Each structure stands twice: as structure tokens, then as C-alpha cells.
Amino acid sequence: MLQGLRRTIGRYAAPRAKETDLSALQEDKPEDMTPEDADRCVGGEYKEAARRIERDVGERLEQSVRFTVLDPLRDRLGRHSVLQEQINARDVLATECKTLWTLVQRLPTLRLEDDDKRAQTYSRLDRVIGELKEVEQKLLPLLEDAIQSDSTSSTENLFNTMV
Image (cartoon, rainbow, N blue to C red):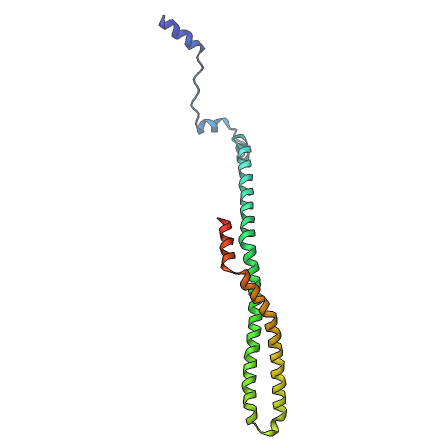
């Protein structure tokens, strides 16, 4: 009776599945199939969707880095270069003012024939002092803004938002 049962079950049992491996897949693939066609056959849509998602995530990451780090850094570097130029111009004028001031200090010891030279030196000193005051008036608000905007707390907040 057990034997009869086995024969009956054997008739209705599912056929055994062949073992699949890569060589079996290679045999089923036609020779003239390109790698792109093979990709489409074996999960091509999935691979294309994964590539598209990866590209979109990369673009978003690049954009967020640009907005949170690079653009503020470029702005600061731009302000720094403008301030550096104005500070250098102020330093040049201050140096010229000091040299003229030392020359003016020595003028009383010169002879009376040098009145023209004395008048030129005084007028040149007045001109340099006026230019120096103008540059300092423009530079002072810019320096104050730079100090306020470049405080360490804003830098810490910038990098804390990235974490």
C-alpha cells in the first residue's frame, strides 16, 4: 500500500527545477546581444532607476554643499579681498602721511629760501590727510560689518547645520 501511495504522489509531484547558474543564462542569451540589451533583459529598468536616483541624490548633495558651504565661503572671500585692497590703500596713505609729517617737523630748521618747498609739503600733507580720512570713513563700516558677520558663532552654526 505504501508503494502505491508513492506512485500516486510521484505522478502529481512537480518536476524538479534545473539548477540555474550563470553559464545557463549565458547559453540562453543570443550571441548578437549587446551589453545594453543584456542589462535590459536582466533588471534593466531597475538598474536605470537606481542610476537615476543615484544621480539625483548626487545633484542634491552637491547643491546643498554649495548653498551651505561654498556660496557663503565665496562671499566671505570676496569681502575679504575688497577689505584687503582698502586696508592696503589705507596703509600706503598712512605711510606717506608719516613721512610727510616727519618732513614737516624738520621744515622749521630749513632756510627761508625754501618757502615754496615748505608750502608744497604742507599742501601735500593736507591732501594726504584728507584722502586718508576718506578711506578710513569708508573702511570703518566695512570692517565693523565684517567683524559682526564673521563671528565664530555664525561659523559654528554654519557647520552645525551640515551635521
